[in-house]
Image (spheres, one colour):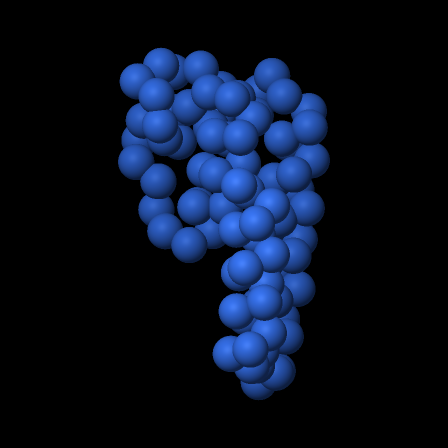
Length: 83
């Protein structure tokens, strides 16, 4: 991450995803909040990822689990997309 308060959409999408897994620092939260205030595309991405997380949590509460092979394929596809 840069030391600048202003971040790119790529950095914002990383923070949006990171926030679903762990707590962001105060500085990261500030960077993300500022970016989301001005970027409608990232706001939509956040809304979509929040919705997907909600669906996954509902499925998990029904004891429907994803097998390790499927998780690995998803992880590889996401890493390929990021790079």
